[in-house]
Length: 345
Length: 227
Image 1: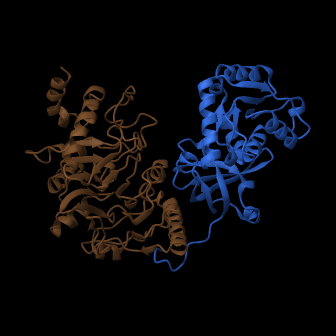
Image 2: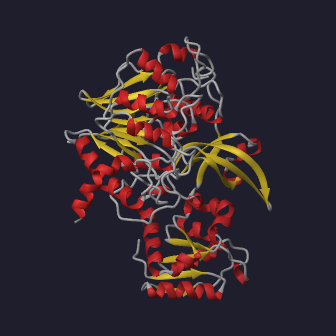
Image 3: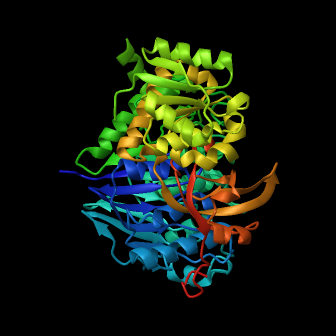
């Protein structure tokens, strides 16, 4: 029986996560890159149970347009918060959403908050939205929160928890930042999860906030086994070194494994030679040899998480140790090096 | 569809034609140099009668081939289900206009340097036959999407559009001839117009993108709750 899987796609700079059960999927964010359509075709997805767009930045949204306009793979529900900036990509998203509503009967919900969707479950996998609150949505991305803080698209980014049969599998933090974390902590929201897809691709969190402190607080609260940065090589200087350091130093007794989808230029200006590695073929960085960990597939089966952690430290850990000696995650990987040496010898 | 043995080579450059013929011979095909005919239709009929497949150079300029575009001939052959590979020395330069006009019916376009290799030619025929049998799959599969027009201009005597393709790359524009837009809409296309089209958004390379059923998209609904 198909146990389902969470696919955290290497899309370059952007985010896209697919929860697959059989021929049905839930998609959270979709940037406009060829790999998004390709992976849905390759996975033989016939129907999209729900499409959640964390916020209306192009690197989370523009790939949703062909998904919505594909009559062969109807989208049942869309959840998104209106964007007041009137960007070109938002205008086109609205055209595509209208098209899907008329041609496929797609239900378009102009709200993505802790109260919407109320219940979204597929084969034992449940989506929980942990941020924003309805009050933040009502203020819109051009307004201010009741605490006086000005809101923008990033601070309204939805933070999504994927839970499978009681296990808090994965926290997708989109482009959320300091204010989002403060609001969640203030409301005592449990944001713990095994895997954290780090917000804003590991870039600046905005304002005068301290990147390192933010990373430490976030990772301390999530207590993940794996912190993943979804980034495009050479785009926007991600991940920031102080953010990776904060993530690494957050939990003294249990340092999470840190990985990036693509090799950051902050880790290696030059690309390593091509080597045989068991990378997922639907990784945006594959053709140009930009992959570090590439696309991550987390099986929703017993032992799936342990399996992926072993695979990562095996192929990604060895790769980084041998090919990217100045990697920002290097100090974290150091403990596995004696094992690698033992295995090699 | 017959197994490919006899291959027509359509190239007005003697040296270039010989190179392809030698590569085909190395690949155990039986190539021959196709002579010109009085029209594109007559040439296509001759090729279909005398061969199992064809290799056409895009840039036909000399002698009796002077009025024929290799891309148009190759597309006509593929439309008649005759496996055909288009070869061009200047893929990026021509892909935007001349080749993209016919790309829907051109499963495989090879750069000249790749057409020298027997294995490349064999693989190209296999891809072509696969598309003729199974339809457009993988990175040729069409997806319906929206295009944002960023510029409309004239290149030589051809009116062209530069547009962002949603689902392919939000930061790069793709050029194609205005003639691909539905006739009724052509006069209304301007900078920042939004078009809907079928295109192969999973193609990795810009040169491989092609467009079908291009027309103006509707305005968003005023009461969609997303304003």
